[in-house]
Image 1 (cartoon, helix red, strand yellow):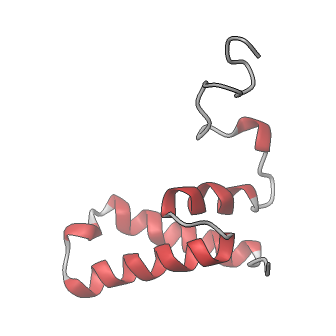
Image 2: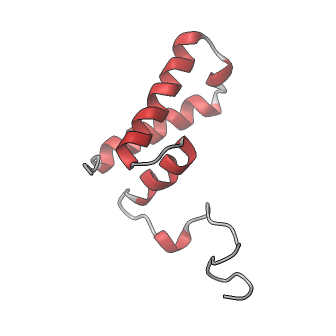
Length: 85
């Protein structure tokens, strides 16, 4: 799989999150299409199938990312620190 350059990933993350913070999904057709395009590009760039997973994967590829600090992980079966592990 080709890997997107970290600068490209950072730019995609920033654009997507800016639009999401501005609630662009409820905006006009052009803005919603831009969000969909960014989500698709993030998914393709990270080898994932949904935008939330793509955002997590993209952040892990940025300089300084620390996998052990992944706030997206929740305590559950098989997760480090979960009961019974």
